[in-house]
Length: 342
Ligand SMILES: *Cc1c(COP(=O)(O)O)cnc(C)c1O
Image 1: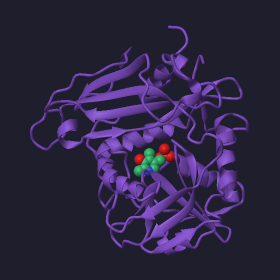
Image 2: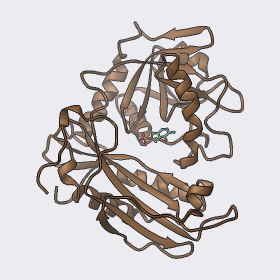
Image 3: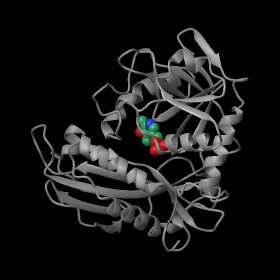
Image 4: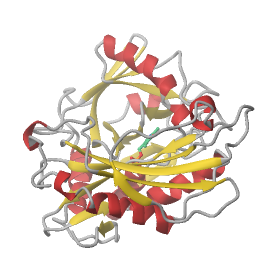
């Protein structure tokens, strides 16, 4: 094996092939049994598989990193396991038991440990997948399911300090509708966002902000990240109405803010409220927190501070969360999950 052929200083968020991946299969009415590790590589799949015909699939995303305590840890992986179970329920797939999910993630990190970047140089991104792999012609649940986990090293999101992003509110497209699948990490939720996102990027914005599909008024998400804004000492974030993905970063930041004595309100957040706020940021596993410099809606543009300086609470929350994650601060919530043997 030896050292991984990676230049740790130039890692980005992109795929690097690693050594091993995990795979388990089950029938539609069978319980899951633990799967096994195999060399990383292509999989073979029926052209009639439920996932490639009808989108019966889910993904998850989490990170393993080296910490100041000299360990390798995951962040709240049980929450990813539970979220995938809720998604499985929504897409009529057999939910993977939490113990099998965690065991699969741990084995993938252990058996690819040479690909975990040194502390501060990034993380090993872990990507669990659950999909209907059996052949089915009619629109119905597939007869066979595959649970897979692969990993890839990724660089730190911000190299040399947080940078503020400029966002465009979409007045044309929505991410999710009431009663749909926006509240779970269904694979089919993501491709429809690529065109609006590309369009916003071609106009110089980092991402698009989606409003709710019913009133076209309330902020839902920023691309595939959750939204927060801070105004007059209160932190607001869109409430989980079923169209918003319940981010684990979102939940962690709510708890951290409350712990700092900041009032947090989960409610409908209108674009007017967001655009009159003092600070705004979005969050997710990939970047943790991205401070927002400006939000544009039609011919109106709201700029936070000078447009390029993250707000004080934004920075405080970023430091509080990342210091727990890299074990520089005490893990008061019991969020850090050490990977056995590493
Ligand atoms: C994954 C995801 C998030 C962020 O969730 P985390 O658990 O914090 O990584 C937010 N919105 C969408 C649409 C997502 O898919």
